[in-house]
Image 1 (cartoon, protein in one colour):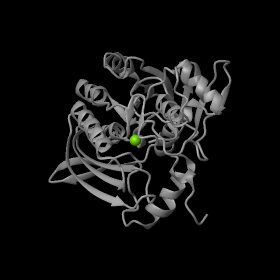
Image 2 (image 1 turned 180 degrees about the vertical axis):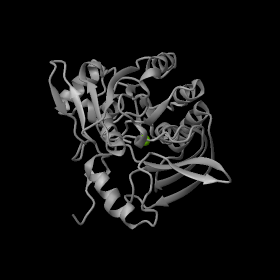
Image 3 (image 1 turned 90 degrees about the horizontal axis):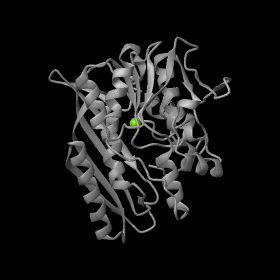
Image 4 (image 1 turned 90 degrees about the vertical axis):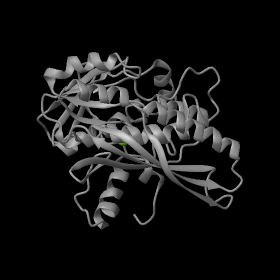
Length: 332
Ligand code: MG
């Protein structure tokens, strides 16, 4: 393969191959983390450090916009390192002709989301490209946080751990697809885009034994579970009947031929937790604004390493593979 395809940005198998071959293959730091944040130690303090580019189309959709997404996405990636998010940088690529009032709406939304997440946007950059060289606006946010508990990583999942999902899957992907196709009329579907500080910091403060955290964004729950199983060399089994999917989202996925387990979320967390702390954690999460529909959906098994399986409502088992193909381009 000699050229970039849309599937290289979809969060599934092709993207993982590109990262391995091109980025990890050419950077000096060959053992770069496979988590959503890197850990940088500075003066004895562990810092979580992450960056994410946002190219969603359309810019505004029910439940959010590219600005809210850009802040919440980076905040959530810091949280996956069990870090308290502290500061963000925001870089804008603007297309010539983009309306400044629209840019102000987006920056207001970013500030509101940052305030909700307790972070400050402290620096940034602005580039403008000629009309047609970019589509309206692309935003890159970089985040810095202080690690509250070292060792939380996809690699730290252990057999017998429970898998908690903080709410229904597929809302964000379905909302953006409907908005893009102008099919929203009468639809109750709203993106879940939200910063999840409330949930993650509460768990860390309560001292429950969290082993791994990951937000199931591009590639959905399927990609996230495959990543964790691969990193930790465990297997993960989830129960189909326990995975919440809103009826309207399930209907949209069915109509578009999508598996809700591969559709992007922007306000959900997968939490891998020691079995003895799972019930206490679940209760805590359910008491939070964005965690009311949380559930334990499965368990980590000793092997086969890297395998994710779904036990269906009929009692049979199927493999849940790393998604591949284009999925939904420009979903975040
Ligand atoms: Mg992430």
